[in-house]
Image (cartoon, rainbow, N blue to C red; front, side, top):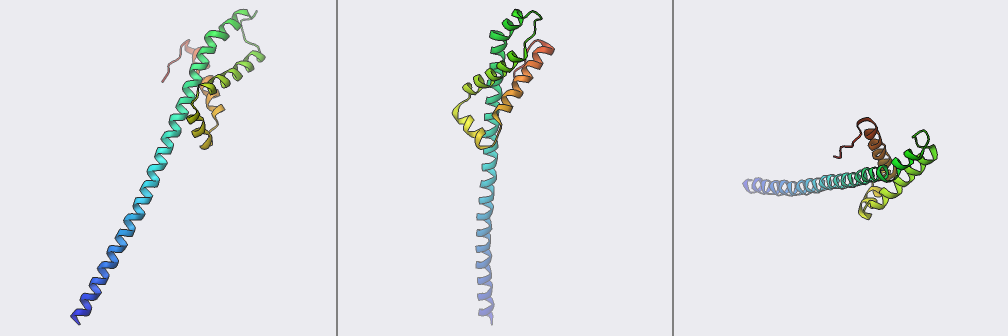
Length: 138
């Protein structure tokens, strides 16, 4: 009888060890997946930051090289709707040219609207210039 009890205990311990190993494997896989998601989010955030920085740089370039001259040439000192539309297109094209291929691929794969990021950052720069006359770059 004692041999049977010992055999059952031995078998039970083996089952528990196998179950523990399986649970550790599952937990490891889950943890690896979670770490991968965090890394992907970090990569996307880096690419978003690059797009914003490109937009800010381009908006300031356009302000210095084009906008001031256009305003000075205008009778009322304001841009026309056509000039504004052209500047928006220039902002987008020039900012996209500044982005690395890796960032474009990451943002596209993540389903991020790169045009919206660039446009939003450009509009933020313009608003900041209008209210304070300067831009604080973060």
